[in-house]
Image (cartoon, rainbow, N blue to C red; front, side, top):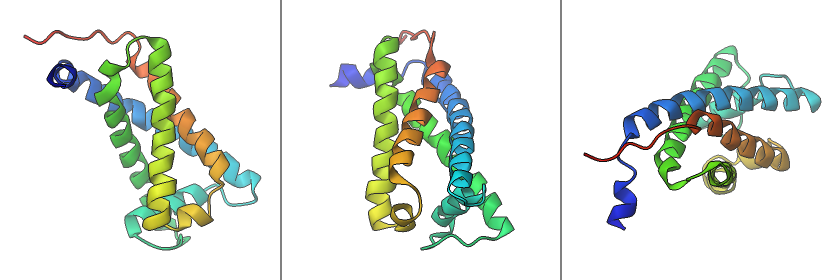
Length: 160
């Protein structure tokens, strides 16, 4: 077990940096896709940002105020960067592009399960009532896959 965890330390700083950037980029694409989906459902494009603002505000329902659009954006980008960094930690275990892609899909599904099925059922009930659950699975898988290009060609460093 120690050998498996010690392989995570070399290059961690570079992976975390890549993960933060990857998470923000993937999070922005994720957000645009969610905003487009909201307009398709005759909701305002900012509806996903208002939904996300409930996390920061610890509110049961979104409050459609201009400041909550900003709160939702900052909350979303912060979480996206943290999720990207979390993925970056496990990248050394995902050798090869196929395994990296499968790991990214699994990571996206895990994010959906944690965010919507666990936290959404216990802390943030709006995440069960508001967003389209099937679409959210797709969007979270897309988020995971968008992380992959940031880790292609990453050379593992040896521990000295």
